[in-house]
Image 1: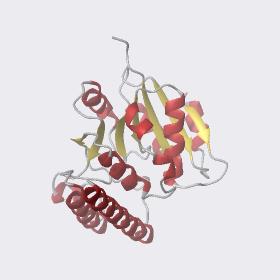
Image 2 (image 1 turned 60 degrees about the vertical axis):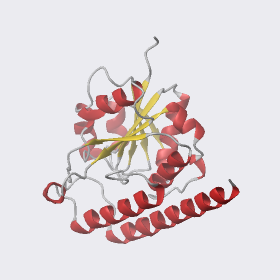
Image 3 (image 1 turned 90 degrees about the horizontal axis):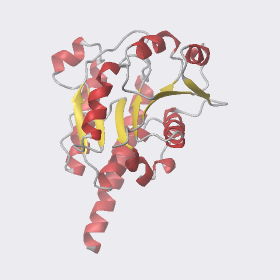
Length: 242
């Protein structure tokens, strides 16, 4: 059996303070290549990425988080990835768990893996997640599960892994260039019938980690609800046709 090519993609924006810690925790021998896509940072993320030996691509202007992921996935496909792992390089998620994400996909259990930070309210808040983000995360996840029939513990994670086939068959290129991209691609994956699994990951909110503000969070939440409603309407229409 030919060895699968595993590529780790890092959608980065002003990640200079956390990038090296993230890379140092990536397990040896699991990842074949690391691609960093910088969304026009105003710090030394690009220079540090090159110094660390990463394949670095920089946008010519700030395009947004969703646009960053689009570039990540395009490059990973062009580089021949069989499994693509997406990880925020802000050290909020533990890279040492990458090997388990890969194993679950490689062994055929799931097509997509998510890293869930939600195990208990006490643990999440102790890990530094702001209360408003915790409660909005819980509400949105409940609503998304209700609409789709899934039972995921978290839809809003920045640590994900995909089988190549998934990204080839989902039309994610038309999704938003903003944060709601994360929700849109999961709804698309569910519509295609792919299996989604989860692994619990530690909650780690650090002062130097990236995080969207309250106003952007509200916009993201409303966009997520709209995405869910659009999915529900399509589901009802398709059911009537059948």
